[in-house]
Image (cartoon, rainbow, N blue to C red; front, top):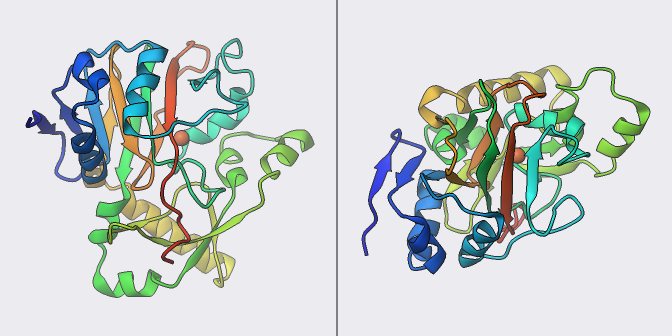
Length: 276
Ligand SMILES: [Fe+2]
């Protein structure tokens, strides 16, 4: 069955005209997976999934993550300490463009969010298409970046938003060793994307000034409006993004507002290092 798909911009973001029953039935799994890679972000309105329903739908697309920071497969994106006591500091890093879990070789395939409490202002989620940003680079730059490797550190993102961190916080952020990844991710599909974001702390082999200038240049390029979709949340929304081909961040909002979104994350299926 063909899907009603409305593109929100030429290179990223589509609204998909499927209702909750169709999503839960899993009848469009292949089309959704294909669209997700192609469009980076998919938006479904008026879905009103419970946590269990969101997990059931996610399982039609792949395996889902669980762990100590999750509650039965649900991660609560919030600064409300009652719902996420650990989120207060490290979630501040989400105000910066990033790809989730660049500290491992197989980052999550993607995630989905549904809002539970919205902030009165701000709090939009923005996504930038790193496939499109790569594909539009001048050819000589693509060649230049081909062999480069970039060091990623979780601390690089968080420290931009947390002033005067304690020794304990620093130790926690540094508990994951830095990871060297190719600047250009060669996907199994044959497509390529830029692997950047606030966790990208240094280009291997360049001096600090050259490295900073190159990372700044590529981040400026990747966050140009034509590569970005900004989602204004409505209650009942379900938004899925491809974590391997987009970066995301949240627009600043009142951290006391109780804003809370529930997230289910799809396990990664592709190693960054596989075809470096
Ligand atoms: Fe994130």
